[in-house]
Amino acid sequence: MNEFESLDRCAAYVAARAAVEAVQDAAASWSDDQLVVEARRAAVAVVMTIAEAIASEPCSAARRRCLRAAMAAAIELAATIDVARALGARDEPTRDAQQCAGRTIAALGMFFRATTNPIIEEDLIETAT
Image (tube, rainbow, N blue to C red; front, top):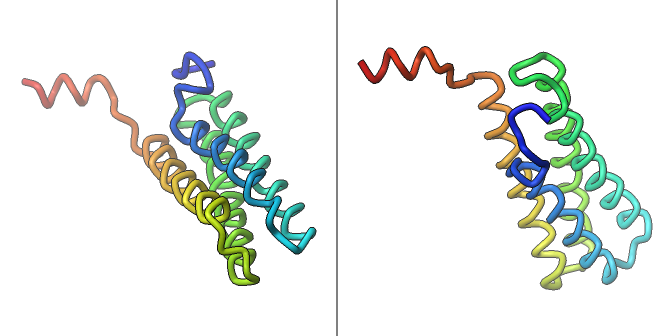
């Protein structure tokens, strides 16, 4: 599995999985069934796309493509939760889901940055000397 011993070693994956659980808890209080479906679909898409990215070679175009798709799905998830809040779901589980979605977006941003600007061992050696 490339540089990750397991999926749990990837912060973006762990954040996305937590968002799935948070959406599941929050959706119970939402009155709009379509928002529930959209939020669950987006949350699952984020997790699955991150897993696909992890399976791709580090710094590859395939990994960057997957991470961009995961970021788009995570932003869609955050927007769906925001709409649910605007429609009246202002309970703690929905607030938690919104925070988890935000953490997922942030972790994906860091993962994407690391993929586009990797630390190369030769650079570390030059810096140390």
